[in-house]
Image (tube, rainbow, N blue to C red; front, side, top):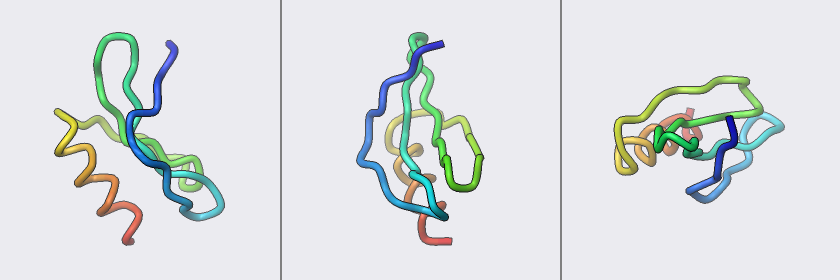
Amino acid sequence: MKREIVSKQYRHNGGFARVEQDNGGHLLVHCSGCRTEEYAAGMAPGLAKLVAHVEK
């Protein structure tokens, strides 16, 4: 499924952390450096999770 980047990208652990949106409108916090992905219930929670992840 194709995704679109909907936030600023931040360098993290040799990769990038960002919020992505799929074709169904679901938001995911994705980090290529940690190889993690987490669902977010909206843009504000997604951005909060992104900031918390990058500050680890």
